[in-house]
Image 1 (tube, rainbow, N blue to C red):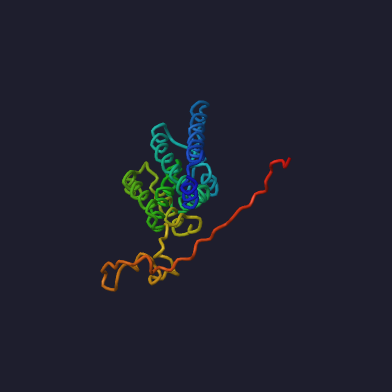
Image 2 (cartoon, rainbow, N blue to C red):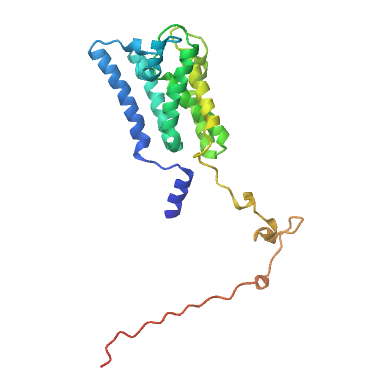
Length: 250
């Protein structure tokens, strides 16, 4: 049991309360903001990203928490929760960096290339997570991360179509910015990423002549029976332990 636990720690794939807790907290904050907006008659759209205007820069921070209606919020909730949960489980050491800098970089890129309109919603962050998890899994060459990449593309592969201007009511600029940001993060973040286990023959100092298994085969691949008596063995070490007689001598 200790061995398995240590292996999990080395790979970085250990379940903690934050794997569920942090994504739930993010979702609750987004829903709370929407509840405040609806309950008190506020309109937070003006706090979204407005490209190429100074006032629009504040939307880089605020826009992921603002949604136009309940459908907009609902369609962002599920993928945001699933992808952020995968992020905190498989990429826990850098999860907050990806989220925080993902919001900043994708938001600034949206501000730079977007149409003159308010851009709101967490979809930019969702595309950051989608892009990062997919590309990082492929680049890391870890079988679990590759499997995660394939699962993500299976579940949300259709998202790729929304980085193109197919709907005037959809901020494809925010989606494209998130996709680019996630790809850049996948190339940039190299440390603290789980590495695949290396076997003995993959080590740099591996010598096939000293491999006890390969000694059973000749140069043609034929099995050779090795006489165990020919194998030099160190004589066993015998340790004696002496204990004093603790009984009363009377």
